[in-house]
Length: 254
Image (cartoon, rainbow, N blue to C red; front, top):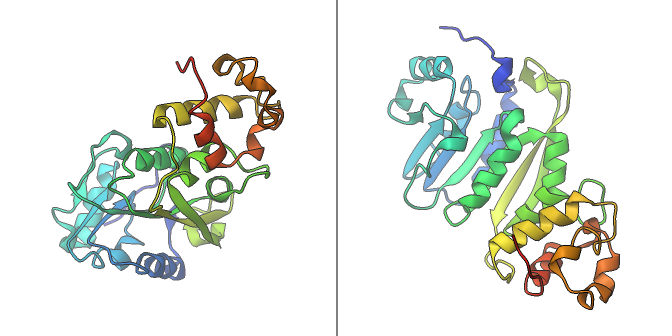
């Protein structure tokens, strides 16, 4: 049984077994009761990881053709595949679960934001992204790659860039390098007025990332507050702790 590749779904299927093994090793650093694979495609990674969850494994795949291929090729996956769009589903487990996948490039950033919404249920993520996106998630302050995705993710997860994956590891080979990262949920989240305020101030600050913060954040602080030296910095100079602290001082949060 064969399947076709659908560019509209951002499909690049992993064919390098050594990459699959390294992802499995990263997952096995801690015990996994429940595991969700996002975008299993042809099952290259699935065959290595579907048995490592002590309690339950599920995979979510939007492409019905790939679901049929997986069920034909791996009968043991019967009842474990959700044929749906990851971005539209509710959490597939009632308690904690780990997320893993060779994520479709065209929705990979949205996948991270979805996991952030589910953070109280997701203690760990190991995922493959376009290298540029993986670097943005893992970036440190004062770097070009550091931005909204870096701050919002790192407020709640410790992020480690694990390794590069070259184009020839995929069918068809993408035109860019890929990278695998690991996100482990923090034991303690930064203190903030509210997550809504935190998300809002970070997005506003990076909306004009080349300007001093007193410009994009002017509507949310008094003239006196804006005299604080922190507002002469740019968004990329602040840590997630800095942004979290600012939420207690801001007003007019829309």
